[in-house]
Amino acid sequence: MRQIVGAHNIYGSWTLFRKEVLRFLKVSIQTVLAPTVSTLLYLLVFGVVFEETVVVYEGHSYSGFLIPGLVMMALAQNAFANGSSSILQSKMNGNIIFVLLAPLSYIEFYLAFVGAAILRGVVVGISVLLVAAAVIRVELYSIPLILLFALLSSGVMGALGIIAGIWSDKYDHLSAFQNFIILPLTFLSGVFYSIQDLPPFWQQISTYNPVFYLIDGFRYGFLGVSDVSYIQSMVVALLFFIGLSLLSIAMLRSGYKLRG
Amino acid sequence: MTSPALDLVQVEKQFGTTHALRGVSFRVEQGEFFGLLGPNGAGKSTLINIMAGLVRATSGQVAVMGYDVVRQYRDSRSQIGIVPQELVYDPFFTVWEMLKIQSGYFGLGRENDEWLDELLEILKLTEKRDENLHNLSGGMKRRVLIAQALVHRPPVVVLDEPTAGVDVELRRALWEFAHRLHRDGHTILLTTHYLEEAESMCDRIAILDRGKVAALSDKQELIFQNSYRVGVVERVLGSNIPQHVSTAIISRSRSSTQIRVPREQRLQQQFLQQLSEIGVTEDQLQLREPTLEEVFLTLTGEDR
Image (cartoon, rainbow over all chains, first blue to last red):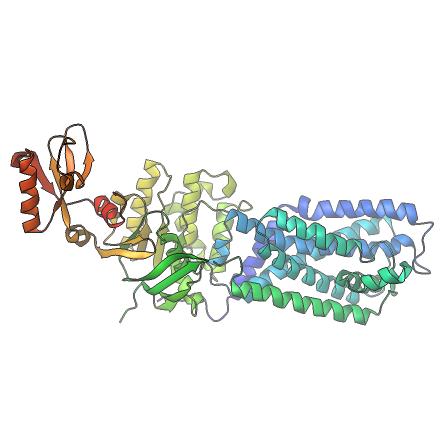
């Protein structure tokens, strides 16, 4: 009897990862170039308007403050979009069965999708950063911290993307998830301002927003200053990553909305 | 002792309040060409999806080549190839990319390329190798689905209505290919709406009706076990005939009437006597065995 797969199917998981990467690279105008251009537009509009009038952190220009937030926003939104759109599209087209028929465990499925989401997030993040660096001086305080927060944040959003993709039955559901959860969380997370400048009530509200910690810690890597300690941001990001990963793994394991 | 290719024991499936499968049990031995028939909604696709691990049974056990589809899912999925009924495809990839991806899911890398090339050749897809799946015709997409199901050389192949909606030429090509797979030692499970297809290809047949196995037998046995034969009367029987004769009528054409005649000797004699009373002479009547389609319609109650 022919036995192909042993206790693990690492090559199968690697194939699924490669397929997900190939999928977004095949439409790189939409998945990499478009977010880069729109982020650059934010930078030009807000950077030019507020550059001379707004100082968030002493000794740092407004555009220098803005860049890490915009990079993180693009990174987070794209990491989320990768898994969520792929899973939903496959469910709608019916081709999700090709993966479900394969001898892949729920952990292998999770690793492939989160891995691809992280890669897309990081690729878009680097792309935005490179374009921004061409027009504005970018400060780099700690590259290891920048990388750590980039990986953690795209991991958080990648896991959330899996959850949204599985949960959604139609594009309308995913759109609601993106517009009513992801977009407000990213816009109200201190991309354009420091939460120290907000009234106490809104400051308090912001501390419940997980994306705030992703951006604040990431920004610390660039500027060496932040609203809260980068250790606190790292712990919050890590806890969210673990929590969302466990939830997405549980959904995959139960076969929720995937296996009847 | 070799394990059966498929072993289903008391498989039940409920979707909310709908009881899709009600204790389905049967075995398919290795090397068989097995037909799974049933009207729409009988539970055929649900059963196949359970074998494939796409749907979880509410209760009961299913094993593929001796591997439980839940506890030993990696092994069971490596042993089975499913050609789905719907023409599903991933519009992002070419034929070759899709086969490479599907092969990779099963842990197979470059060492499998030779087989993938062979599959393209056998299924006449070589010219379409670098074509995006989105641009292929329905027939070509169907061939790709078959190739995808075979990338890991599964000993058990499930063809779920493979010829539904395909033209005559492709249908013949698919029949030929299914025969070839069978000759090469694969166990084939075929579901189809074309009963002549099942009649000509399958060794054994299970008829599923409303989630239950209504019949399971060798094809010829199934026909002979049926409680009636078909009488072809070389004239059209009018409306002024006794009710028990009129209810036995299967169909009428311009010049003949097909009628159900009891198989059991005593009942048959009585029935023929009643026919002669309404003027049907012996030379006007020919008795034959029912076709699989007629058996199917009787068992599933679709002729009533």
